[in-house]
Length: 307
Image (cartoon, rainbow, N blue to C red; front, side, top):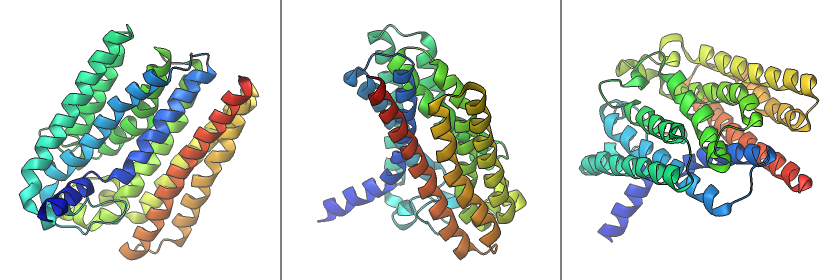
C-alpha cells in the first residue's frame, strides 16, 4: 500500500493534466504542416511528440524541485502553486530533481535520434535542446527565469512557439508557410496563459522575491495584460484572414474570440482577492486549452476536406 501511495505522489508531481496543452499545440503545428503539403506519417508524428512529451513532463518535476522553498509559501491550486506534493512529502525532493533531469536527457537524446533518422537539419535538434534548456533553467540556478520580469516571455516562447514548432518541424522537416503565419498569435496567446497562472500566486511570489509580472503589478494588471494579449492575437488573425481570405485564418479568428471574451469578463469581474482570482484563472486556463483543441479540430476537418 505504501508503494501505491508513493506512485500516486510521483504521478501527482507530474501534473499530467497540463500535458494536454503541449499535446494540443504540437497537434496544431503538425496539422499546419499537413495542410502545407507534408505527407502523413503517423510513426514520425508520434516519435516527434514523444520528444516533446518527455521535455514537457520534465519541467513539472524540475520546477517542483527547484521551486520547493517558494512553493512552501503557497497553497497549491488547480492551475498554479506547484503540485504541493513536495511540501507534504519532502522525502521525494531528490527524486523529483533526478527524474526531471532524466526526462530532459531522454528528450534531448530522442531529438538527436529523430534528427539522424529523418536526416533533418541540425536546427531541429537545436530547437529541442533550447526548449529543454529553457524548461530546466526556468527555476534552476543560475538563470532562474521564473524569478525575473522577462521569465514570462521565455516561458511563453516555449509554449507558444517551441511546442507547435516541434510539431510542424517534426511533420514536414522544416517550418511550413502556414506555421510562420501562426507564430505571432500563438505566442501572444501563450503570453496571456503564462500571466494567468501567475495570478493566484501573487502573495507567495512576493514573499519568495519572484519578480513576475503579477507580483510586480498586481492581479488587475495581470487580467488586463491577458486581455490585451488575447485581443492582439485575435486582431492579428482577423487582419491576416482579410489579407489572404484563407479559410484556416477565418476559423482561427472565430476561435480566438473565446479566450478573449473570457479574459475581458475576468478583468471586469475580478475583485483582486485570491479566492475569486483562482476561480477566474481556472476558467481561463480551461478556455485556453479548449480553444487550442478547437483549433486542432478545425485544422483536422480542413485537412480531411482537402484529401
